[in-house]
Image (cartoon, rainbow, N blue to C red; front, side, top):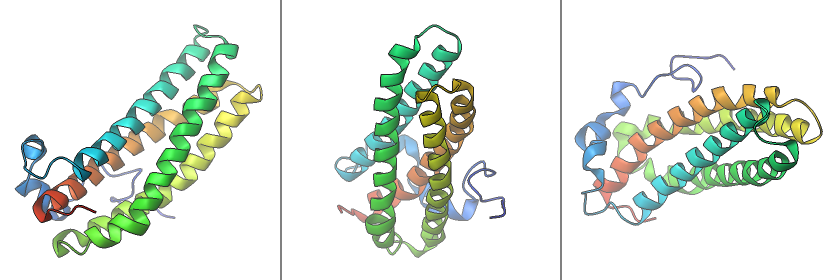
Length: 181
């Protein structure tokens, strides 16, 4: 797969054509919107959970590399938080791709291409998640944590880019349409 300016690994934000709704309903007014609760709050909470779990994985891996945590303390944390992160993110993406994106994309044709972009992100992240799981398993089997850390840092950047872009597409369409699921 060839990287393009809109590929997850290379883009630095949404193109202006896909920012049309977030320009109408910017982030700073979301929480005051009458339809903010429910689905929007749940969606944003899930995204925050992914960010927190990835932060824990990075902090713990750096602590192991810096020898401020023992392997005996680190291994169960990596297994617990790594497994939770991988399983929850994979499930989240499956639900979005099969349930929410097809329905949300019909609510405003101006951002329909944004959902194709988000699905392409999910496909790109599938391979990265697989690699990250392999690197985590290697650490748990006695390998060095540097390989795992080398996967976490770029993955964190790409996940954050994806989550920000997804929020900028999905939250305004939900707020504008009153979509409840």
